[in-house]
Image 1 (cartoon, rainbow, N blue to C red):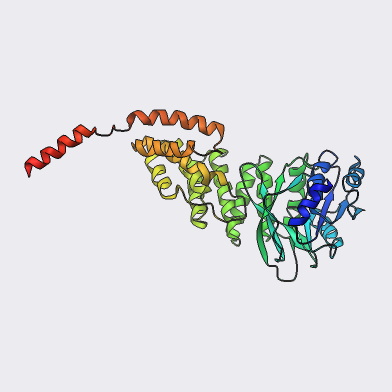
Image 2 (cartoon, rainbow, N blue to C red):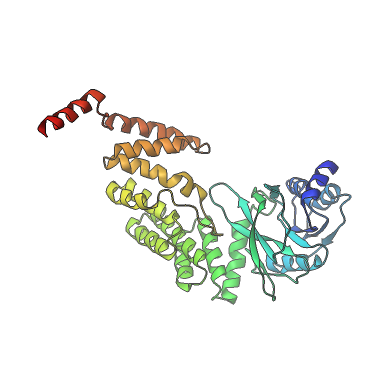
Length: 386
């Protein structure tokens, strides 16, 4: 442990203080703290009522690292995180916030930090997003929101992305068993108090979706989109509403309209285009789907923060293109697309297997190249005519 800490310290140029709120995290807290320990110089952890020995595990893993463990009554996430982060003010150059089911991973040397805050990337299957997990230690920060809370300050906040540190979210913490029901209660109460808060509407829509309430979720997503504001949240609202209409409500015409509105709202984001093309292809509308895909295959993933799907840009659009190319008679293009897919080292096994099968259908239909003798014969005839 000492050797690893010394290695990180040579890269790190400033001090870090770990900030957490926890409750009944005995199953996961050692994993989290063991990973982050080499990076931190101080820690402030608030326990909101653990009865499973979480406190003793914290003391054991962080033994030898200066810090504070506080017992704090639970109110809501915004209140309790604010109490925690303000206790840590001035304890280090930067404050690092984590949940107990997070694991911090270093992908590159940590540069000198100069911004007021940094957005760290989440490493989770399927989607990618960023959150503000690294904050200047000399600012008075607070958290807004009863759940899905976010840090803010009264002073101007210069924010940058930081790729050197990545958060692995295992989503297996002690409060996960009733997470959606709890979040729904908190968000409904907050929406009653402040019905014009677009973030509350968005995360209540997500929660209703996760609870299996598609009609309520669709209505809230449409409400959030109509409120305007942050373009990424508007886009994600329309995207999710379209997916629910296509998959749960079985209303493809409405889904097409919603996907189209999402794409128009944020043209650089292509998840809605993918859903639109895949839905058209599944319904036999191959030419329409192929025309859409031909315009976007190969476009890079944008630098958006909210719930991007890297696989759509990496292989999803190309996979759909490889299928529609076959059905519209562009067999050479289909084979080339399959070959590009099969060359990707991170292509999922199921997609790889299907691509191999798809390629076998297209290869026999690719016209054979003319033989050299045949080409010379045609050239000779052309010469005699002249």
